[in-house]
Structures are given as structure tokens and as C-alpha cells.
Length: 426
Image 1 (spheres, rainbow, N blue to C red):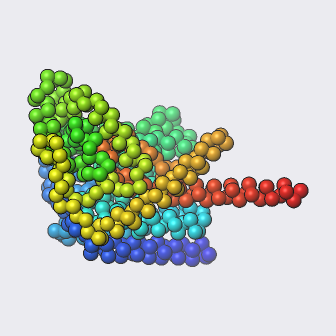
Image 2 (tube, rainbow, N blue to C red):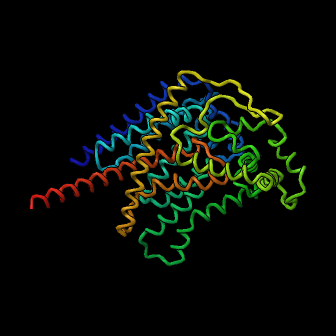
């Protein structure tokens, strides 16, 4: 009976938490200076319903999520708020892992106080879908529900391909830890399940779209992330906006002006590699900035809102609409404090993990899965490019682990203090 009462109260608290977070998002929507972009998936959603897929420029995860809400256009606020509400409740479940009540409250505050994540969920085409899929992926991973983890990991990668690295790692580790009396072959197949899913997606893309690319937009991303002036964009400017003008920003011009690497059919990939070979110093600076922008900034990346474009002569930067409103400025300041606290907590988690390694403990605790998406995100970030929007959801997922680590460190410090006081008394 006591457990039943606790469960009922917990469910009420979870629903209330979701509603409060959603209400805060509703208030934040009053200050937006950009429209919601989730409606960009409407055409693809209808093409899926009509079994008439014509392109794979972006994976269809966002379009699939929009299908139940096609009635709510053109802005589809119902989809945004519904998925945000469900995300908040899933995050509430994950935070139950934190043993200390005060630390658990801190973890729960991380979602509604993350101003930039809220802004992205309201305006981005697929951020709220990514948030929900990642949280469900993390929740079922820590609960060691293999099939559900595999399913939601697949949907997550179908929304953001950058998660394939984390998906493969988590499925492998989760399968390895399962105690099973099945044959070695079945255990091997389970460990490689995410790789089989990847092969199936590539085969499907090749059959339907005539290309094994996870998304055909990857060619554009590869070029922009390695072209001559990419190193200028980070950390201040939006790469897509900055690199619109000039001969160096046109991959076709770069590819046609060089006789190198002619065996590569995709001219955008070829142009990216030519740019790397022709500009090795710029490439090194760009790669260093990617690492710095991923791990160390307290500001969002890109730092500045607004429009900044490279001039056509490639000698100056044109300043457009700076969007320096008070609502955006205050939101950026709040996120800066949020990110600074996150980095301090992350440092504590690294200390905790280091102590576990030094003590030679076998770290089989399931909460480790909460950090893998963030750490694995540096791989696509290094290969392509880094912006806060690509890692902000995985940073949120890691917060309950940070608070678990902080609780463990505080318990360790207290035990050491008690031993010290006991030795003095003796």
C-alpha cells in the first residue's frame, strides 16, 4: 500500500513537473523573434503518408514525429508543446536516479532554466524531437531495457545522424552486460545490433534514394565544415550564414579550379578535401576551435545572434541584423551561468570517474550511459562542425550523472572527515 501511494504521488509530481516546464516554455514563446520551424517537415510528412519519398536531404525522424499533428498547422504549436511536456516527464524519471533529494531538485531545475534549449525547442525544426528521443534512449538504457533502447536509439539517429556513434557504443555495452544463457552467436548479434540497424538504413537509402548516405545534406556539411574560411566562423558566427558569399564558399568553383582528387565523384566532398590540402594551417586552427567550442565555452556557440556574412571579396565581414534584443541578451546571460555550472559539475564527474578507475572498480552502474552521448558527440563534431544546438540535449542528459557524482564525492569527503575526527579522538 505504501509503495502504491508513493507511485501515485510520484506520477502526480511527474505530470506537474512536465506542466510547469511546458508553461515556462509557453511564457518564453512570447519573446521569440523567430517563427517555429517544425512546419518545415510538413511536406516530407505527407510524402511519407503517400509512400512517395523523393529525397533524403535530411533523415525523416522529424517528419515522422509531425505526422500525428498535421491537423495543427501551419505553426504546429500542439506538436511542440506535447513533445516538450513528454520530454520533461521522461527527464523527471531519469532524475530519480539521483539519491540526494537536494541534488535531485538541482537536476530537475536544469531543464526549465536552460534558456537556450527551450528557445531551440520552440523554434528549431527538430530539437524537441531530438530531446524526447534522446531522453527516452537514455531512460531505457539505464533501465537496461535492450529492445526499447535499440528502438529509440534508432529513432534518435533517424532524427540526428550525429548520434550513431553513441548509439553503437551504448548498445554494445548494454548487450555485453546482459547475463544471458543464449548461444555466443546470439550474444554477438545483440552486441552488434546497432551496426546491423546502420547497415539496414544504408541499404534502404541505397534502394530508395540511390545513395548510401545517411543524409545527402552531409556533403554540404562536409564542405562548409572544412572550407577555407571555416576557422573564422567559430566561435562567434553562424557558419551557415557567414559562409554564403565569395568564390571560396562555392564548392563547385573550388572543385573545378583544381586537378586534385578527380577520382571522387561527389564534388562537394572533393572540394572539402581540396580546401584542406590547400589550406593546412587554416584546417588546423579550425579543428582546434572545434575541440575548444565543444568542451570549454561557457557561451553558446555561435556566441552572437544575428546575421554576419563574409563579403564577396573575402576581405571583410558584413554586419546585418544583429538581433540584439533584451530578451535574447538576458537569455544568453542566463545560459552562460547555466553552462559555467555545468562545466564545474562535469569536472566533478571526471574526478569521480578517475577515483573509480584508480580504485580498480568495475563500473557496471547503468548511469554511465548518461554521459556517453555527450562524450561521443565530439567525433561527429570534429569530423563536421560544432554548435551548441548539437550537444545541448546530451549535456542535459548528463546532468543527473553529474549530481550522482557530486553526491558520491560529498559522501566520500564526509567519510574521510569522520575517520580523521575518529583518529584524533583515539
